Length: 400
Image (spheres, one colour):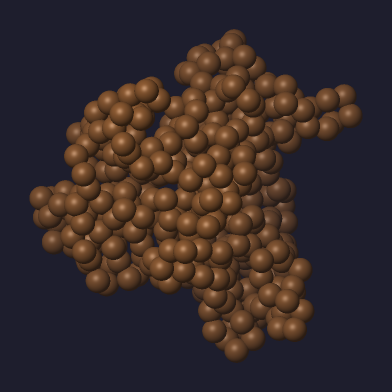
């Protein structure tokens, strides 16, 4: 957690030659511009301009000047670049030409909802993510294929699991950049892997997701492979999910109050799930995953029930909930904003969810008897629900 002065000193003392200023478009794709150390003071004081009309979903050419101001606390050395003449990266806040926060800066959106939650409810929210991805071979021309790197299954070990060394390399790189991976293993699909992160505040958790995807793509490429985060890379095989776990603690330290608040938060997410699905599952491919191969389709919650959309796992420590429908193609800043805003609505209205679902919802006959609501079945349906939702439009009008 660096300050501006510490960053300036670090760059001077540690032989830093390039500073990457990173930001995100509305879809959550990371962009960056590199500056020299001589421009860093100006970046902090004035911002570095860029052409917003060239970024999908931002502005037209009539008012296209935006400015990147680095967030000093996010400084990280890029460890696969030379250590002589280091390259560092910082995430940025985006401002318009009037010096106002840019309305489509999804990172700022999440930062604001976290501040609001703390100010209004005195809650410290913690978030952990579990992100799945496939590793595929390249052909003789170096082009991507859909041939899995191995044929291993859930938590198999070498020699069946070929991804062991790459996962280790990814975890080491994450640690070098200041992030804390918690666990890694082979997933169900052939060539499918998962790496889980330790809990952190929501903004850091979203930063971790963005950094993680960048590192995985980089390490896969350096090993002659391609990484695939799409929700359903292979028909008939497990899809890629991004499970999001959320816990909360009150400033008072009252554990019973924290449990009650978590119930309200769950009820808020349950109430708004169809409306926010467009931002949790933002591609056509997303809807090929939902409802198949252990990906939730029904709006439901359950205790320890992995077929439910929201699960309350059995844990010895602080209680938490796990949202199982999001996939890695989502913008993590917007996805967490949606979930936390829904949670706040649950807190505000003191909402109560229906009884927990104990049945196996992957059995369609069983699920159909329960009369549960279903998630949208297509991207168009999800978008329509978002556009018609007062809850969503008041929160994310600029992102629909």
